[in-house]
Length: 272
Image 1: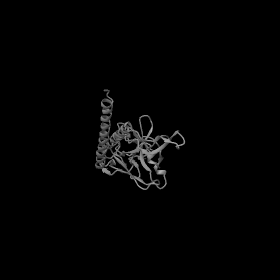
Image 2 (image 1 turned 30 degrees about the vertical axis):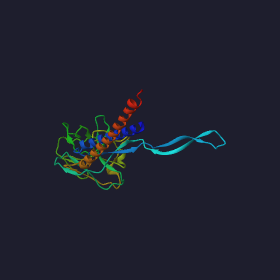
Image 3 (image 1 turned 135 degrees about the vertical axis):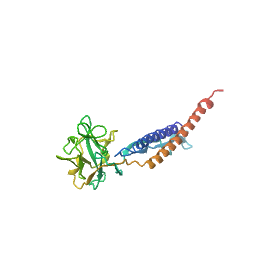
Image 4 (image 1 turned 90 degrees about the vertical axis):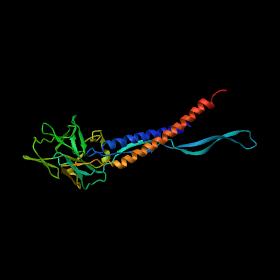
């Protein structure tokens, strides 16, 4: 009985975690460049049940010996193994704002590859993003909404001196006195990126490749556009309802076990 109780409880916990992931996706449905997460469920290892029983030896002997009879396998519940970002490109949305930029990924040499903007946080660490909703701060630096510097191809903050600028499809930010190549980086396997909760990605060590130096890679930047989130709100709502129903079903199983345990303890085991 307790084994079933724990199995149903693990199902509730897994669906609650899945619901949290889906809710976060829905919250970021309007966040530019956001990549939705997908929760993957996995079953705990199955257990092989066996029954131990006494077997009478031949008639000439009064001894017995134990034998093991296989009953079958039993599952012990599920859990959320990991959350995996979906790196498919979102649709483009025109804003008309000169500081907004959308990365368009063309031909890539690796199936799991992806291009990203490179920025620098307040601790001087490199971070990567698909969110091109940039702005210009009071010192003329091109920054993210968090105030992080957008970097050029040499890893330096881009300073516009407060001038109006245009961005070419090749990623060159053009000013009156010259042009600055915006840093566009490339990872051969986007699954190696780690989300850090600010619509930014990081890598465990080192830095990503300069996209312009990767053979066979094509990309362009569209000024005045933003890449929308790749969250499908209709599908996400459907999955949220499914997770809720699954949680509810497991909850009813737990309640049934609880009533059975209550009866076993307070009624069947009652003395006299």
